[in-house]
Length: 306
Ligand SMILES: [Zn+2]
Image (cartoon, rainbow, N blue to C red; front, side):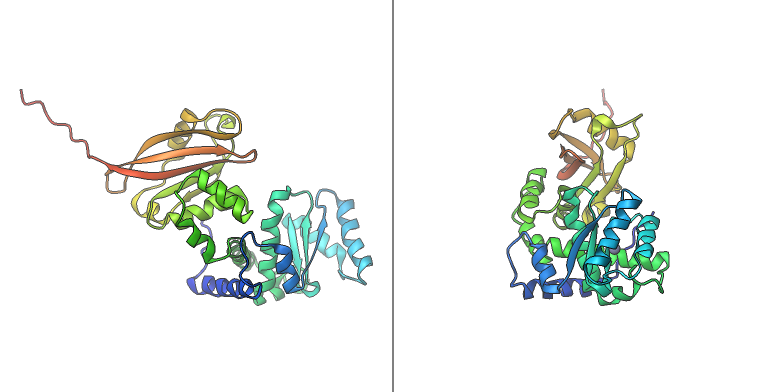
């Protein structure tokens, strides 16, 4: 499936909205405190449980009781949560963000930032689920979701700040760990962002998926393959089979750093290049980073003369 790519004009627009927000907050040091963002935007946050129908009803009717009809149509919302399997939602007319409490805590920050994204993009208000008259078509829905994700990333990584700070780091898992702590974002989103920025003119790639010792029948389930833009120019993404056998060849069991290895990849023009791969398991995901080392001499097989 081809991921939706936002037009440069839209990205610029979203970024400038986030920049203005950061400025109003006094350009704080990372990590960005989302409660401060919500305070500035006058947004409320509460939780629901998508796990059981009963709890979902209770969560929504409680909202109704607490604040004089906070939600006009709790059944409609419950149905929407079920139908779209929503883990979070935003009610524009109530300026309220709702997050499913069953989602693991480390993911709440992204969900919250995503819903804040819907709030700061004014054209989203009319199309959100709080409104039962307008049901967006799947393509419109995909577009506003992509925009909210872009806004969430811009917020959590504080637009250009992360990009500038990346310049002081080596492209390693260790750096991702330091930046993850500094910005208080997940390992996955940090590694992703790092590859995006550091990899503009430095070929690198990332793989995110299950622990290598859980690869079943050599069919690993990589959730994300992340080539940097310069990697994409010079190389084709290595085949899943190749990556599977390579990662399995150097990874141990357990958590933390699982192993590392030099590998040779062939460029689109047939030239050979050395990469350094390392994998880390954080308890949820195995994160692999491949970074460029050097170009290798082209090996020519000389015929024996005598
Ligand atoms: Zn959304």
